[in-house]
Image (cartoon, rainbow over all chains, first blue to last red; front, side, top):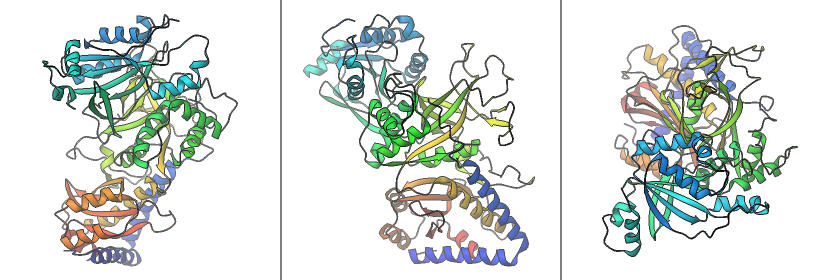
Length: 60
Length: 521
């Protein structure tokens, strides 16, 4: 049971440490994380609008 | 043009479409406003359907009503016309109780009546009002009607209505149609959105004429300000900046994008501006979508959404070229199957549904997709029927407080990564998690977060107190990992930080301590 805010911070640090270790030492895990990063990047990039894509002259 | 004295009088009528039409005509009192002019308006059909669904039984006509929004438009334009347009309006109230004019007289005189004050003021009975402007065709003014029960996470605010010295309340978001003089659809949509952001971010209320003036002063074009023939997206952005908010622009390429955006911001009550092309496929359902030739570009305010309960399965999000069998990420927003919009040409809380509709694109160039994601609208097609006019979203603009610097996109990106960590671990066995996590991602104020944490009995007392006493940013992104209805863990992101930094807040909320132990093991 996490009983304090300090423990909640330690918990997040521990999860991150665990994730880093797995990425460094486990090829299958590293590849899975790379695929997830690519999916996240695609989601973000495809929804970003550039000023060129804006319909600057269309009125409505 | 007739000139009459507008004496304030209240009269009650039994609700029917015919009575509504007659009342509108008698309120407008202009020769151009015939019964046919009124009946041809699609807004009338939409409103009548709403009143029948909501069980409206009475219309109360309040003549000689002064409406601030119309008065500004009147001062900006109509007062200088040779024809003497009137400055005062009519307000039509809608009630579920059967009321007669003599009941209203008795309520005014505090005399005995069949209808008590309590019944008259009952928030379940009072449906709201429509201001009828004395203009020939675009007479639907400020409209505040209680949303349909289907509307979830509506961007609503409390409206106090004063009638006969009594205070009535309706929780909704204002709607009005463009008058094509001081406002176009972009102005009407932004006007609705700003009604709510004024409440959330404490700015003034702006009338359509002022919004148009701000927009055209900020970013000028060759078009004149009044009469207004529309605004560009850049002018909309200028009008938003002028009042101290920041426009967050997005391109909703897919259904998943629009679901994520609508859900994430509406959960905090922030409405969105949605700009899209209308495409009429009623003549030929197989006609491909031609982006160079839309039937029209239109702007609406996204004011609520409909999402089935958690019992319905989520649609996993995968990248477009994901390998077969890739499980993707489960997001609560993937259940949103329609959004409700204030569409000035149809009415308040009109449904735009995600029904897997996509149209082939004619002559796509290399940068363009071969299929366009579209939504089914309630617009009438060239055949007079509904169901074949599609709305193809082009851009989303969210007016946010300047301190909300991180948008929904990088948050979703990080949650996708985090979910992969959990799922990969879970796939290797020994997991106390008996289901895949579903992520509920939304923007929140810290005050709302703390209010929620305070109520959680599944958190240790020390942790709860620690959160409540902790200094936190004013706005946070919440990503709650759920197993069915049960909360498992929560990630928090600082919405006021910068994207290049690690903007995750340094705490992980462990609703399920067994899972928390497993995550670090």
